[in-house]
Image 1 (spheres, one colour):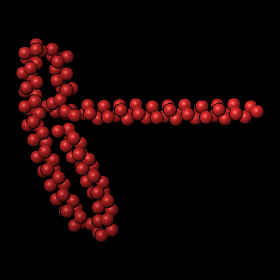
Image 2: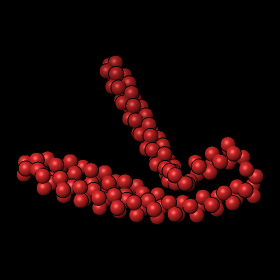
Image 3: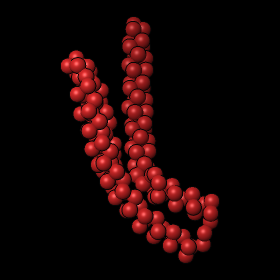
Image 4: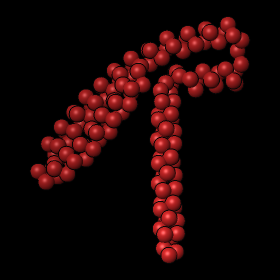
Amino acid sequence: MNNWKVWTAFMLVFLLGAACGVLGSGIFVEQRIVKFKNLKGTGLGGGKQFLHKIETQVKPDEESMKEIRRIVAVNRQQIRGVRGKAAEEILQIFTTTEQEITTLLTPEQQVRFAKIMKRIRKRFERIKLLRSLQK
């Protein structure tokens, strides 16, 4: 007779746990997305954080701040261009290095080395993807 109370309590606890898990996961994912979007424009020469620091710590007047924003925007484009060229050159050097090392290894070592290089190339591709998303 009291069996239905046990099952009701069990189901209630289960459903509340599932609801908390779903809500918690949703909040976690949302925060990660916000954090990822805030990465845009970070780094040398540009972005919201750099301008925010100037605005809060240096405290220029409004006219100067407009000019600072313009200067940062122009320089941000130049930095992106240099970063793209540097990435291409680094990839070329990396490929040359890989070829030179491969010639020195035995076939068994070449297989292991290829696995290492595959992981490194995946990392390069992830970085390229992140940078393309930031543009």
